[in-house]
Length: 58
Image (cartoon, rainbow, N blue to C red; front, side, top):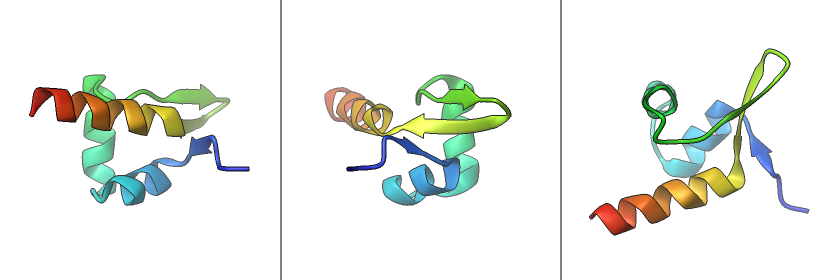
């Protein structure tokens, strides 16, 4: 089974960006995330949606 939720570090690595930039995208609402207790996770589908949005905008 593919991983459904990624840590911010994993998500940043998957996008090829730094951790700080990923947190900036989260803060701006450009990338979705969920909280599980005190942990922040990025759904794998949110990465696909983010890339699709970038493709449409570009």
